[in-house]
Image (cartoon, one colour):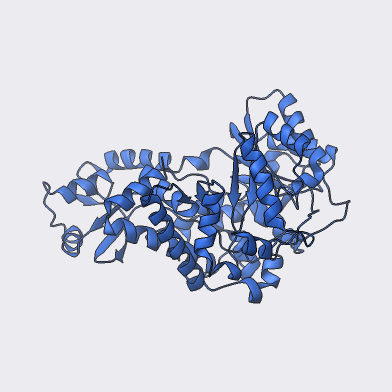
Length: 462
């Protein structure tokens, strides 16, 4: 038998092995030694598991490469579809002053997308080769330019195209009224909002003209649910969050959400300026995350279903061999080749993070504009090529030998914003350390092999 390439790491009292196809297996110390020394017996159960998961093979090299290559292509099929996520930044205007806001609050009415820009942005987005597209409306606060949101939806639906387009709006919901809600539901625009915790924490993170932001949000959510519509929520962790993990989870459960994505801060914009006040170390975040994961598992065992979003992304890769399309956790990342962001003024950026960097005065990842460029022009830019190269983990010295690289990813834009290079020392990089820590927790649970926990994890991926 021959061995395929693999990476490994000790987890508890066992050794975790992974390969490029996203398969994993745990070996005891004795099994690992015999695996390395080619002393495993062919009839052993562990030998069958290693062969099934492409760590061992007894066929010809050609046949193995054909079989494993097919599995690899299937695992990384997201790389072959082109930009599927298209973010329309309808305005820089915002009616909240969140303590971590990555885009600056701006009430200048000149910072809104026009119909001409919107039309050109849609035409450009529809040139992407992906058959299934998502048009996501962001800001600022996108409902502050609701007429252009309506225009984009209606114009897109009027086009003759073989694309299937889903629409989504990311909003604080403060301006959601009956008219807007009816349009969103009529045109099946999915709604996502922000919920950072219970009343005290949410109001502290997301102030709104000295009003009770949480109270307003709660009323909006109640109306949406009463009318039978779906809504999801995203969370951002600040230093204020760290002591309130239980309250955070309980609030999501109380509002009926089935998923909580525990998101670390992105050190851009206001978050970078306020880091000493709202930021935290990797260790502090991971301790917070561990408490949340343990509490969520406890709730699931007691009959309350709620999943943690980052764990769900990783587990779907681990269990279902589906690399998914979460832009930051893929290799190469989704910048340009997986998503595009259309700014209110017509500039096209590689991703949401790139336009946020631009709002800080750095246009390094601007690919072009909707007035002069076609889709293929954007894909041929040096910035697009740099993003793909700098985020291909298999070619990065700090990542290619990491046991987690089949499930992970990096963001060159954030790396550039923090370290002034798209090739930082990833072994010590902030978000890399966070993602490693999350995966450490997940694989420790899998190594313990508690049937109840494994069953819960699998239920999150169904």
